[in-house]
Length: 143
Image 1 (cartoon, rainbow, N blue to C red):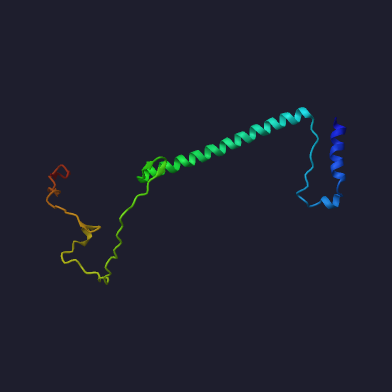
Image 2: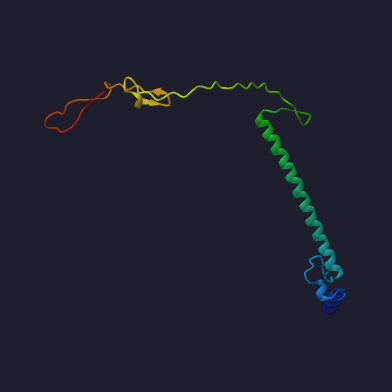
């Protein structure tokens, strides 16, 4: 059996000279296989092709499902499996352009209390510290 396989390869190699085969990637040498191994290999190949086709179909179904989920998130509605077209009224207005203003000092000196345009209110009476009592060394906070 090994001699038959070797002869099969040798006949294919004898068709062209070695220097003509060098560097040509399109030349393929086939190996001799018995009928039993061919049927097993062909069954495995067919099964592999079916699995590959099933994977492609599953990928297409998943992408369609993902697209439909995304459309539902956007608020699109479906009738008879097709998305309805929706119209959105859009008005674009230009913002008026003004010259920049020079920075000015705050008249009451409270600019450090501003956070993003909001002035915090600080009540100094809410957190007063009472004078120290003699002998205890503790500070009493009135609330």
